[in-house]
Image (cartoon, rainbow, N blue to C red; front, side, top):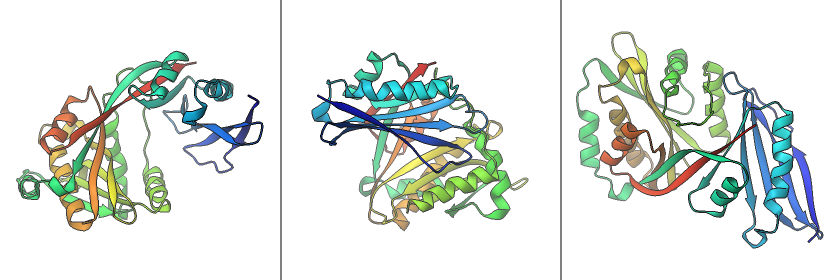
Length: 293
């Protein structure tokens, strides 16, 4: 079968990086598969690239995946990157492909879903109303308010020690500009971002946060992004408190929403326990793979 690989470059570059793409087609120009590489550029992750590779089910085991992978890896090497990461659901062809092509498994993630129609809103509200001396909840939709922008950016270091096993993911460096850009990117996709934070009442700073992204029409499933509590504020139940408030708001503000989805590293036992206590039900497992260059 004649196989053609066409290289493309995303003309839009941002401070966080840029993307490269390769399209596989047959002799008639029919698409067979694609590969995308995201080249990270921000401080702390300059060494990293991320791969997304897909081959049409009818065209698998014909060398299309390998033909797409080769130029992608070559481009990452040429860019001087140290690690190329990719994710696949456990037990799928993608899982087996990565393992057979030099990638090593570095992290296991469990996806879980909370069906909102079955969520015990009374119990969730009870968790929200539990007193947490010295702290109060706050929230906003979309972009962080100006008066909280600096402390919100500072609170992002709560994710720095998130359990990642052997993944060479680096440390994401956050500033106000990056927080604003992330919120804008979500809005530009037509999605709705809600952030719930725990405020330290002694100085008005943010001690922890949780983010939820909902489809613009308020239907389907929402997706939890990050949830983190700064090390100096851990041990007060802030994680479950904030997540419960996020659930409560989702139920009240998006009555057409079906559920909430979260993914958590298997070795993050604390967050998995929070999800279990709130009624999230595991749906499947995904595996993070890494190619060391």
